[in-house]
Length: 308
Ligand code: NCD
Image (cartoon, rainbow, N blue to C red; front, side, top):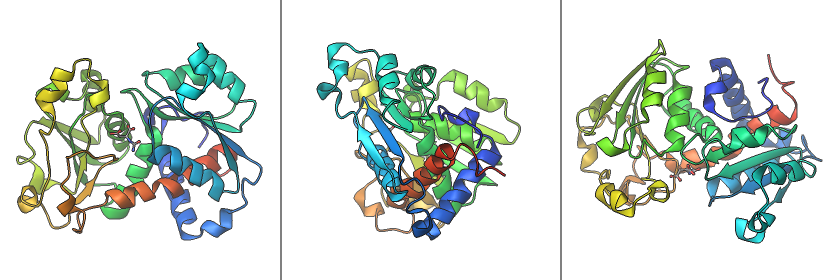
């Protein structure tokens, strides 16, 4: 990888993605080999929105590479409360850390913040924009379970506000994929994303309101949470809440090989009875966050030396 910052999955080529996934697989096989690799490195965590998996897996990843973390903590307890701008906050923390991880409610925040710092900045979610490190662990999980070429994937739920969906859809255009987008009409993919996806040669995309019409053809079903916190109007949320729920009955028409994924947290999209089936890959997916983020940090902290 020859990138200073990781802001969107659009910046990644197939070779970049494969470099990260291959490195993650090596690390997962032999984590002890990298246990001291970044012994003096410090990772700065700036989370302006709630997070469990992303924050804790970044923290675990840095520690498993021998490094440590400094954490801004909650917005409530930080100088943001005193009116500090994001640009100032990142400029200060870059003096304490070798790389920064930023999650922020505003779309475009990571791109803006990255203009102010020289250390690598990783976007851990910018509003309804992008979430490229989640995409990397999603791709890793897809590669392990179904393979990334000749893939038929259904991406279902909140496609409008779901940043994991936007990042994943762009990244998959590097592979030979058929992408089916399943959502209520009001939560369809943003039109500019659909336009961009249509420009890609190896990608076929279709939009649907019902899962039934495509379920039997899918290798992977990627389910997402309706992003309640992004709705300008709670009534609009109530109209679509609970629209798509997967249970054993829903899966009657599915292939035995179907892999079900979810970036988590889930609310009611996937019934707990699915957890014990061979289809469920969402906890494995969350666990993959550690080796994948170790690989990303390793490549970015090493300044791209691991390329080629
Ligand atoms: C996602 C996010 O924050 O965008 N969570 C995550 O990072 N695994 C998905 C979500 O919140 O629904």
